[in-house]
Image (tube, rainbow, N blue to C red; front, side):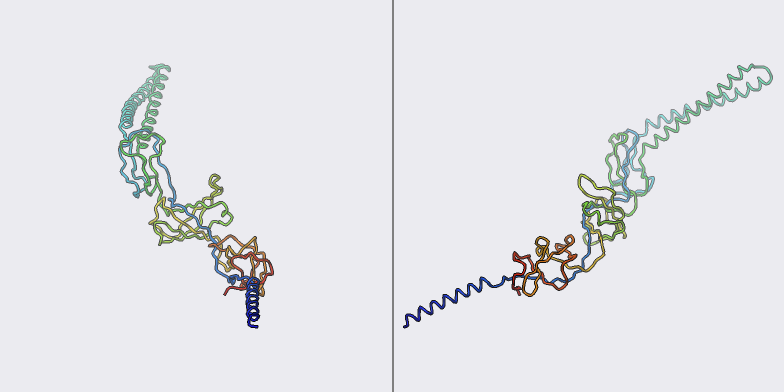
Amino acid sequence: MGRWRVKWLLWAGLAALLLAAIWWWLRPPLVSVLRMQPSTVQYSVVATGRVAAQQESTLSSTLTGRVIATPVAEGASVRAGQLLLRLEPEELQALQAQAAAQLAAANASLQEAQRQWQRQQQLFAQGFVSQAALDSARLSRDAASQSVAQLQALQQQYRARLAQSELRAPADGVLLRREVEAGDVLTAGKAALLFASAGPPRVLLDLDERDAGRLAVGQPAAVLADAFARQPLAARVSRVAAQVEQSSGTLEVELQLTQPATFLKSGMTVSAEIRTGQARQVLLLPVTALRDGRVAVMQQQRLAWRMVHTAPAVAGRLPVESGLQPGELVVVPAPLLDDGQRVRVQP
């Protein structure tokens, strides 16, 4: 009798273990859920760029000559008309002096020819000289006058060329870079100086062409220079390029600062955030909750797969445009379970 009792207890234990295993195997799977609650989202575009002067220009000489003076250091502020570079002027000065001497002689000849012309007119009126003599005196006077005019033009030309031997600031601004030093030979037309006119700096950004439809002139922006990470600056979009750079697929966008920023230097690297829309309340869905455009929603302890439409990700989450309501429970991550399957929510 005791032997049969032991066997019965053994079989009963095995049956209990089997039933427990079956229960464990068949019990609803455990899932984690997220209750959907509205969050404030600010739609924006973030990009890196550079600081540029209000207007930058490359200055070059129309003459070829040796540089003898560079009185302004790179980065120095200058006034309009201030001397930035001078070429050796001796040859031009000699030519100008030669033209001046020739002009003085021509003026003396003109005065003499004018006196002869007046004298010949008087003699012709008295009948002492012929018409031919009078015409000859007139031609001499006209030739002398023409010679004076030509030499005056030549002297003005040398004066202009002498002025071209100096490069001066076209406006108030900053000398950004100098390509030559004293003693170098500067070739006509070669870039010598990089000049930036005075005025508030600009910020130039290269944005992905996919963002073109979200950008508009006047949109607010925030700018942060890498070198001054604790001094954000307010700005606005002042220009959106009319065409895309084909080689890089980028679109140049210009920002105008709306507050003083004297610490910004041309060429500095900056990051900028352009606010492309008004902040609004939306449901944010984790990317991992989405599978084939659907999410698993809890309905009476069962899964209900539902199609949702989302906007581009914001900080790693997808703004829900349709398909979900505030307060609904969404399974995260999206489970590999069938629609209608019973599940348990992880506490």
